[in-house]
Image 1 (cartoon, rainbow, N blue to C red):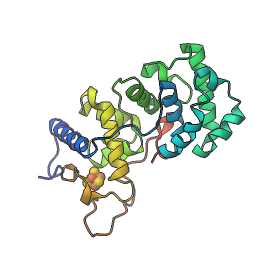
Image 2 (image 1 turned 180 degrees about the vertical axis):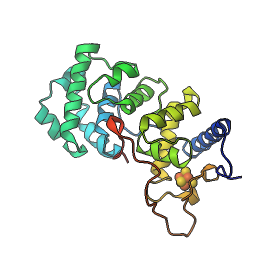
Image 3 (image 1 turned 135 degrees about the vertical axis):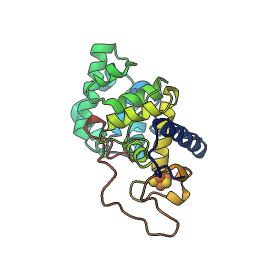
Amino acid sequence: MSPRAKAESPAEKKARGRKILAILAKTYPDARIELRSSTPLELLVATILSAQCTDERVNAVTADLFPRYRTARDWAAIEPARLEQEIYSTGFYKAKARSILGMARALLERHGGEVPRTAEELTALPGVGRKTASVVLGNAFGIPALAVDTHVFRVSQRLGLARAEEADEVNDQLCALWPRESWTQATHLLIWHGRRTCFARKPNCPACTVRALCPWPEKTVEGAPVPVPARPPARPPSGRARPKGRK
Ligand code: SF4
């Protein structure tokens, strides 16, 4: 029976959500964060740079930056105009430079140059929203955290696992669906599915391994023209967590 044939109870949704996660885990056994970093500070910088930019571009830029700027003190001491120039190709370079410099100074002033390990302290840093904090907690510190970027937002809504206009609400709904220990990996799996199959404009539904569990009414079919929805299922997340440009 289609998941849409009758109203789904919270327990049924939870069971379907867990099945989807299990299938995606088999589909993408190598799913992991694609931003390169070797320290929490590097991951923080890379995540700030990744707003409205592809991970590939960020990795190309940070490959040059990270060997030269290793500590919060190094980052805080960069001339703003120089940093803007160095990160120019990631877009929104003025705002990103401001965020990185402000973040590095705040780390020195409040945390002895170390990246804090709580969402509250991380989101109090300049340029760090809930998504960035979750990425750092989950991937640098191994503290389970769900991060809602543009792919997680889109894929979870198509799969009927979340229904909300704002990223924070989607985040809360997905956290309620899956056990805490799976939050970080669930983020990777939804991002990988969004990048490799459930594309924004032309999802590859015929090849989708969770197709049978997906209630999206505009699923594409083999050989048929791909429908372009008149409007997206919901508008992208807003605010600092806005992931619009992440690919
Ligand atoms: S069936 Fe299509 S819309 Fe649904 S999750 Fe798979 S690719 Fe996305």
